Length: 458
Image 1 (cartoon, rainbow, N blue to C red):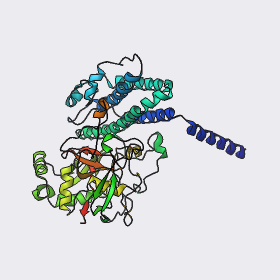
Image 2 (image 1 turned 180 degrees about the vertical axis):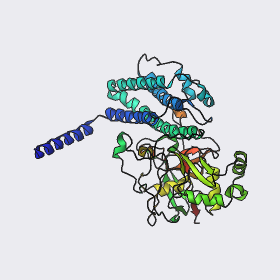
Image 3 (image 1 turned 90 degrees about the vertical axis):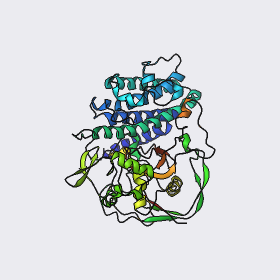
Image 4 (image 1 turned 90 degrees about the horizontal axis):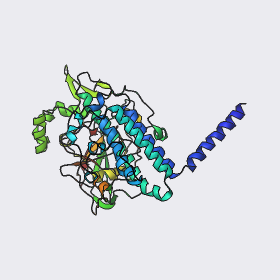
């Protein structure tokens, strides 16, 4: 009987493998679509309706808006285009839940999103379910030619939703941080994550606290390297075209800067010494009265850290996070180093597996290395925190924006922005790439942003 059971199990496993292998491209993409959509719902399932409507600052959007906006994307750019005679679920949603797609029509002001009580959270969830059902029906009925047309936009919509998953997490953290009750979003515990996350190996560096050792630097010789996406698989238009760049000799820190190391900067009066700061940074520090990273709270002479698992004591070995570019640059100056360029970062990451503490782990907080990196090994290059670079966010040589309304998605290069690399604990591992270019204004710090140091060698 045992042998029969084993044989049956083997046949079932073989049948499942064969079924997965024989799945059509449309079925595979639709499965990924539902995995991502369901994970968004999972992220918001513990929130009360009152949590989902708060806007704590103009850059933060209510959870309800994220749920609706990502749904509006699929309705606007897929259903309205490819479903004959399609009628909007609610025509007014086109105005309420557009964000910056100017060619898609007028939009509600971003800083007033928290004033919109209707649709309710429950109505928003019904809107999501309705659009998901329409997407299912469209893809199921599409012939091969039509699917080829829809596929790139559906893929873009999936990645767009993963971006908003990260925003949902960082935004609800900012909302909860305004509450003196310090609400808990999720108790601190490991979780397997969603769907394809089960196929992702656990981070090689682990999560347990340990002796990570002093910061060391890995040296790189001068080289002309290929920068940007190679065209294989999905990428945003700001990652192209692939081009050659000269990278001079440099060295890169083998791990991220920790809370303990940043505490030394604070203890040395780093926030009150103008010589470390850019002029605009120094003005911002004094106007905003910054004395520590965002979410750090000093009580009885000790620093505590507000996390999505509540108010905690600061772990000295965790990567420091929620820092502006101004703070990252000032710390680097204090440490006798500098921030890397995005080209240095991409060169260093070229042969490293994309592996780390991502949102699929559902930690929602940077993790501690359990051991010091090996000689010439770079740890924490992906996940944990977005790493500030000193590179201004500008188009690559030969850049061309995509056509039409969707070309506006990343086709705008705003001044006064700096590039971040590597993803964070709120980024999906199925979304990040070595060529991914994120960007923020230098005074913003509600995202999971941190520091990796570099040196010139020339």
